[in-house]
Amino acid sequence: MRLLAIILGMSVVTNLPRVLPMTLLGRVRLPAPLERWLAHVPYAVLGALIFPGILGVQPAHPAVGLSGGAAAAVLALVRAPVLVVIAAAIAAAMGMQLWLGG
Image (cartoon, rainbow, N blue to C red; front, top):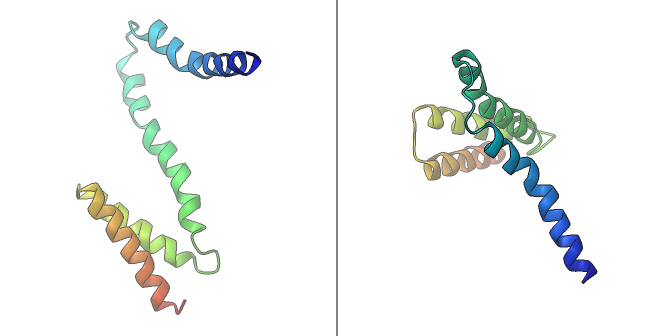
């Protein structure tokens, strides 16, 4: 019974910050400049999360991760399908790793 109470409590604490803004701010209209600025936040966060991983793929040879990241970025910019972007990034990283001898 105690375990069930813990699980229910954790689910409430986890979901409360997600549900409250949606319900309370769902009807509020933000100013247009603020909405435009907020539209860019997911991309900035994604970049901040991905870039350190790109550099850490092979710490001795950062070019391995950078080649995969560059391939993915170029293909994403031309709106290639997601599977093509992923496959090309993997292929570029593997190719760079083979080229560097490792």
